[in-house]
Each structure stands twice: as structure tokens, then as C-alpha cells.
Image (cartoon, rainbow, N blue to C red; front, side):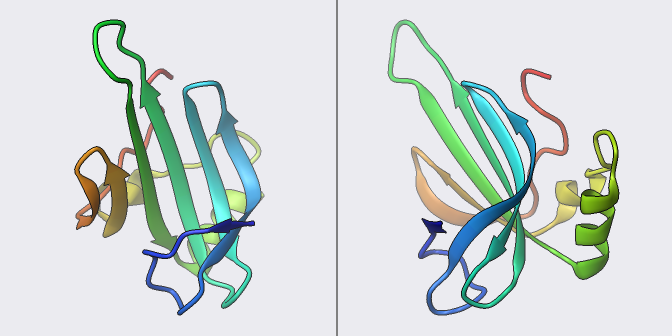
Length: 110
């Protein structure tokens, strides 16, 4: 369980991965569900390594509708995630936590 206190689905968001789409040393993507309220979130993590300065770590969370959940869960290969491009999201990076208008729909390193 992963507590993410800045998410707005309920007063005590605790997420668990329901389906992992990608999991490498530098990048991950997963469909998560809040164990407190049942809301679904798409989670993305990216780490860009630098040899001359501190590495960059970025985390995104986007709410996912019941229809999108079923599409992701039912996909055999990589699901179509283009809806994430314009989905209001939370981002956490070196600037802190804030709301943005979307997140990437493909892995950075692919």
C-alpha cells in the first residue's frame, strides 16, 4: 500500500497496484486503486539519470474512469493511453507537487 496524501479522491488515499504495465529501474507505469475509497489512478514514474548533477525523478497520477479501467485491465498488450495527454493530473518532481493538464501516454525510454 502506498499512501499519497496529495491525491484528492478521499481524505486518506492509499494506493495498491492492480495492473503493472511497465517496471524497469528507471520507469514504471501501473493502474492503481485507492484501498480507502475505491478510486482508480494511473501512476507513472520516471527517473532520468545524470552523471554531472542530481538525477531527476518525476511521478504522475491521473484519475481513471470505470470504462478506462476496464480497457486497461482487458488489454493483452499495451493499452491506448492517449486519454492521459489531456487528463488533469498530479505531478511530483523537483518543483514539488502541483496539478497539470496531462501526462505522457508513452514510456520515455520506450
